[in-house]
Length: 281
Image (cartoon, rainbow, N blue to C red; front, side, top):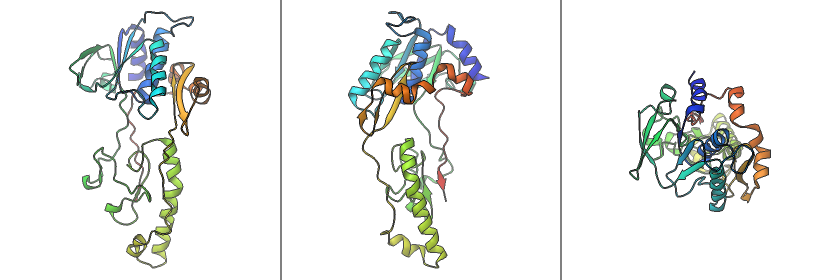
């Protein structure tokens, strides 16, 4: 399989490029960095990395959902495992075009950034985020980022007609994070139940939609929560706005993931795109 081929290619790789400075890109870079280079100052680390690993991000910092001080600490941990971060540089093109996918997972790749710089990679890993599975949705219902335009408080798709709702990564009512999905479930279920009961009672849905006094409303939490392990023992993150120490990130999340686990857990690849549906109608 392509995953077995990827693992076989790692020991001979000298240049790895990861596109994306979000959690997926940073976690992948940290795992590969410690696996291939060791950690600087550790038993198996060295001051000169064996493998060049580069993270390219379009943003001014990695981990855009977290505070700059946390992002800076993450970059420090990455540097300790031989990872270089290039900021303000979006991947413009790759050659071959299929690089980073199952058909060309281990192909040597030329990566061109929008700042004009060209990089060569033995392995190229796209980790630029999720792509919502909304190809079957009419374009009039989609926002600019391809997600479904959703009422941010009731989770209804107002332009689609009665009793259409969205939840999850396909909806644009909040950033696509798991805790926002969990918070949205009771809101959606309550409003769905009220709409259906109103129909069964023989009342018009139009009347019901014009009277939203009883709707349960969703509010996006402003306090950020995100945990990002970096290698075997380090990590950064925040919970409800509070900065978490590295050992806490490891204890909560880092100790149950890792490069050694990928083979046993049957993970099929790196940088895979989420194909979540999340449409209820």
